[in-house]
Length: 119
Image (cartoon, rainbow, N blue to C red; front, side):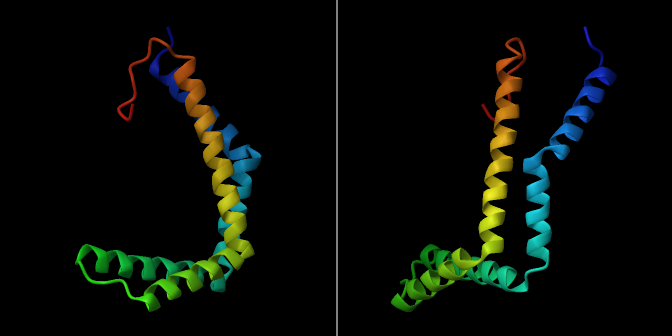
């Protein structure tokens, strides 16, 4: 039976392998690209702020004006037009898929392990 230090050592190795995976490297590169793209940052920030303002109006029972909807659509288009943000989204999806596969493998290959709290 493996002891705690052995398990932790394997976990560290798994972390290193994940960090060396193409999906992790692409995500890191996409995040760095976003750091250097002020227009993409602004587009994402503006969209998030506007959507938050709309959500607050909905929560408070205030009407959502046509102008609010048009502005949200315009801001969404700006986000979609950003190559940096498109690349980031693809990288995030690929990394999430890798993490899902790792989690599935752990769950599938450890039948006697206790259920995770999120299950």
